[in-house]
Image (tube, rainbow, N blue to C red):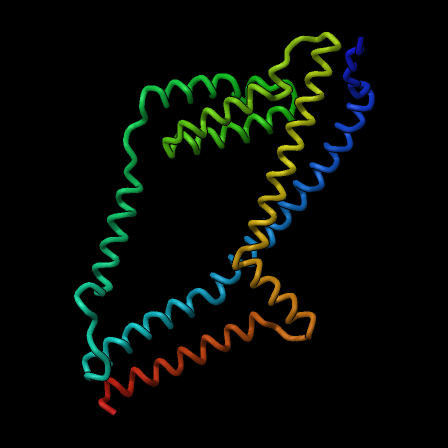
Length: 247
C-alpha cells in the first residue's frame, strides 16, 4: 500500500530568516520608489514653475492669432459642433457630475465603519504596525470618498489575512504570523514593481531621460526648452501684431 507523502514545511528558523531578508528587500524597494517619486515630483514642479507660464502665454497668443485670422478671412470659422465653448461646457458638465457623487449607501457606511474599527492606528502595538494601519486607513478613506464599496471590501479581506489578526501566543500562531507577513511583503513587492513600471512609462520620466542624456552631452535641455518656447512666443506676437495692423 502506498504511503501518503508528508508535506515538508520550512523550519521556523528558515522562515524567519526569509522574513528578515524580505523585510530588508522591502525597505530598499520602498526607498527606491520614494526617491523616484520625489525626483519626478521635483522635476514636474520645476517644469511648471519655469516653463509652464511660458506655454500658457503661448497658448493665449495662439488663440488670439486664430481669432484674428478668422476675422481677416484667412481661415474658416469653427463649425457649430466644433465650438470651443461647447466642448468646454461639456467638460464642465462632466466635471460637475463627477464632483457630485451620491450620498453613501447604508451598506457602504457599515463596511467603512467595520473596517475603521478593525484597522484604527490607535490599536497598533508598535510603530511599524501603526504605519501600516495609517496607510490602510488612508486607502479606506479614499475608497469611501469615491463610494467604492468593492475596494473597501478588498481592504478588509487583505486586513483579515494580515499577521496582526493572529492574536494567540502559541508557536503555531507565531508561525502563522511569519507566513502571513511573508505573503504580505511578497504582495507589496509586486505592487512596488508595478508602481515603478508605471512611473517609468510616464511622460515626466521620458523628460527626465532626455534631460539626463543632454547633461551627459554637456548641454542644458531645460534651458533650451525655455529658449524654444520664448522664440515661439516672439513669432506668435509678431504674427498677431501684423494681423491686427492689417499687414
